[in-house]
Length: 88
Image (cartoon, rainbow, N blue to C red):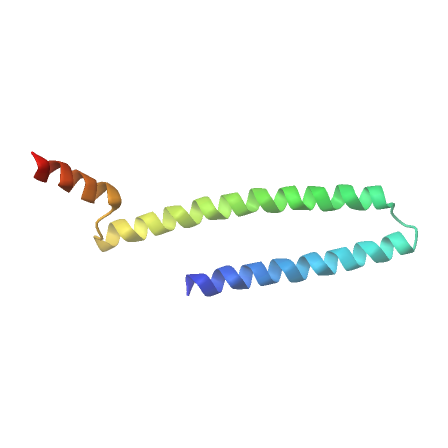
């Protein structure tokens, strides 16, 4: 399910990117914006997208960690602590 959501998000982002590029090219063709302006717009959108991706990944990790904690599944840290206790 999570994998499907990730793919859905990526697919949506790609469709949006293609549509934006298409519309920007129309504006360039009409002479309403320059290619340099388009580059700046695209770069700003890319930067914003990267920042948003990082934010979403942080939130996703937090949610996953909480789900693992609530489910009682042993974490890598838990297993390492048990190994240390057994070695004593």
